[in-house]
Image (cartoon, rainbow, N blue to C red):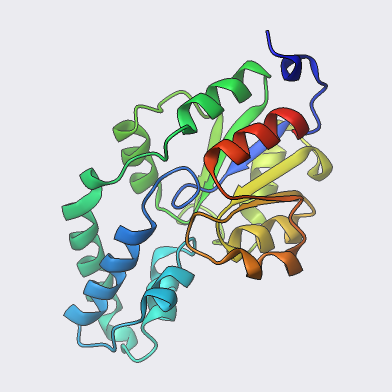
Length: 224
């Protein structure tokens, strides 16, 4: 057994963002946002503008990415995004090394959870496709609680598992994730391989920024 398996836990609850943190979906989501905005006649956002909203609740994200699309077109905008995403969802997979990382954390008896801007239906479908049913002890989605960066997602998970903020770690690829952790009084770790550039993370005081899943895995075994 590895030396890290005997280290005392610093965090009882670990909350992962999904898209761009565990799931390699940033490029496809960015493109689907752009296609949806084009379909309803809005000004197509740049790659950077579209990637920035990843992690927000869907309609909040689309409205932010397409400020010139009138509100009465939001239902059509959401429908077109879902159309394009469904056409490509089978092209998306977990980042390499994620399964091994999660299994090691399970072996250390952390509570593992997901805190995501996806819908409940979207997360459940992604978990089933990735064969991760049963890996996570709990989850919260943007359509069943407040969206990021509001701290309610983390507050609800901490309350569900009876864990204090200082024993909770949030891991994500966007400033929305890290701001949510800061708002909830939790420690955060950023990953630089997702939607947001890591230069924007420092003001949000993450404990660490991982540049690969292997970096993240190694840090968690030593420090979580």
